[in-house]
Image 1 (cartoon, rainbow, N blue to C red):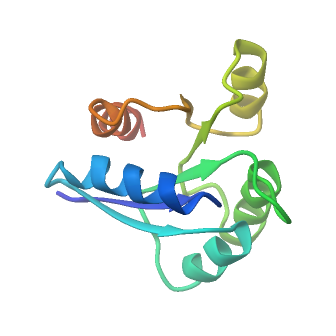
Image 2: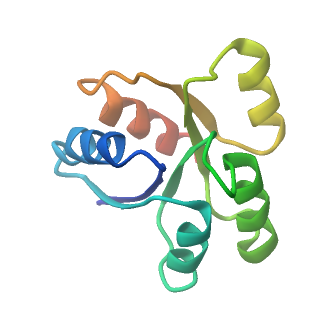
Image 3: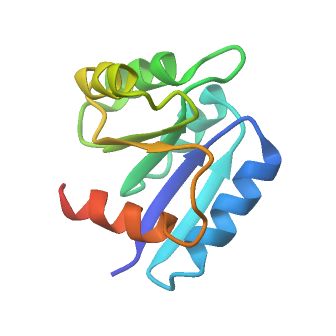
Length: 123
């Protein structure tokens, strides 16, 4: 089974590195975009197994995008934040918003796929 991931991050270099790191695993396929608005458009016609969501983005930040995803698509899409703001109190706040988990930036490219598998296994 292939895990389908939508990775939402406004930094093109990070999207590229994360996509490469994740797709080294043949069981993972990544589609990425650079904004919350773009993610909402993609989700109109495609349902991934997991949304990896940057917390700090211009125009529509992660929590706002998360709220819009929930409003439009319900709670069926697991959301994991990928953020530099990964202190424990921030992790707890994101979990309280309904996030499945939080991956800290800078992430370890060698273990990112493993982290994603562990999170998806919890769903």
